Amino acid sequence: MRYVKRRRDPAVVQTLRSAVAATIAYVVALRLSPEAAPLTAPLTALLVVQVTLYSTLTTGVRRVNSVVAGVLLAIGFSLLVGLTWWSLALLIVASLVVGRLVKVEEFVPEVAISAMLVLGVTAVGDTAWARVVETLIGAVVGLGCNLLLAPPVWVDEAGESIEGLARGQRQLMLRMGEEAAGRTPVEHATARLHEARRLDHDIVEVDAALQQAEDSLRFNPRVKEGLLHRVVLRTGLDTLEICTVVLRVLARTLTDLAKERDPDPLFAPQTGAAVEQLLSEIADAVVSFAVLVTTDVSVSAESAEARLASQLRQAAATRDKLAQLLLEEIQRDARQWQLHGAVLTEVNRILDELDTEHRSRRLLEELDRTAREQRERMPHLTRLKERLRRNRRTAAVRSK
Image 1 (cartoon, rainbow, N blue to C red):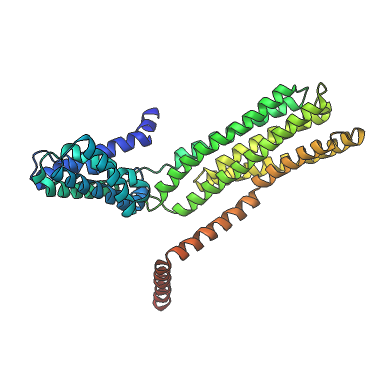
Image 2: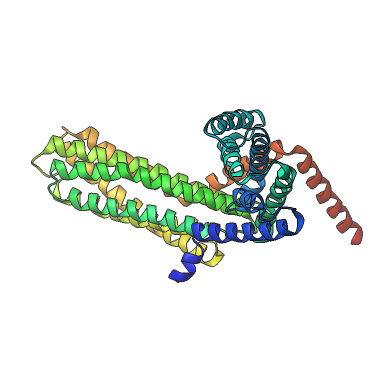
């Protein structure tokens, strides 16, 4: 399993596909270019190859433009002045300016990179047009390798990242619950608050993994219902991100409560036990939610949804019990009633975000929004699809 996982690692896949593309481009260029060592072709192929098919289709043209622009500039400089320190400086300036003029957007630096690399291997001015041919060969081979050698789908890796984030939240909630059940020193409560804040860094990493998974699903012929997969994963991460924010607020509330009640316990013994039980049940529900949004098999998804619904019902019952205990505690001592009420409010927010009905409604809203944006972005394609759909319905009616 470790070996298979290493083979599917993005860096490994990118290395192998880049090497294949560069080698094929060099072999083709040997046959078509008059140069004895047509290194521009594999160089261009290396710059064109992308990790996902979507990124190839969306950025390939801009990257090819940047490479071609850089190569043409390098050819011009090699014909006129050759490679010196001052010609290199002029080349870099000219490349960055031309990159902005041809609107290659994020690939402006690659115009200068391509120009410098090609200038280094272009020693004879008579071979200028051969370099252009090699550049086109490398660009075509690079794009062709991305189309023929289907990139992997990174859904599993994104799912593991989402589940890892959920388990990190679970561990934090368990520790917060254990400390709430007894006497909590202020420094311990503050440490939990810092842990909750560090979860933001985990969300950034998960978002990057999810972005790669979303790109690998777009325009991928091996994937069915790619839009649904993307929306399920994205809305799942959005929910966990909201839970992270609320969890950070809850940690802040418990820290303030520890400062107010020091050296006494945060809650009465029975109330503290209820807080610990509730946070433990919510922690399990968070992990079940992550499993649900990362499960693509219908039977497993139904089982995960049923487990999540059961855990949420149990947590809601414990929440009601805690609410009654907090009310009784406030009636005895109302000095920290705002903080006690905040604890209950933040718990309710997490339960509401994890609710299965809330998730279904959010999914439908996101699917409608995405479909509407696609129709607005590509109106001609939308009209063509509707016309084909009407024709199929008409043919089906006539066949009856």
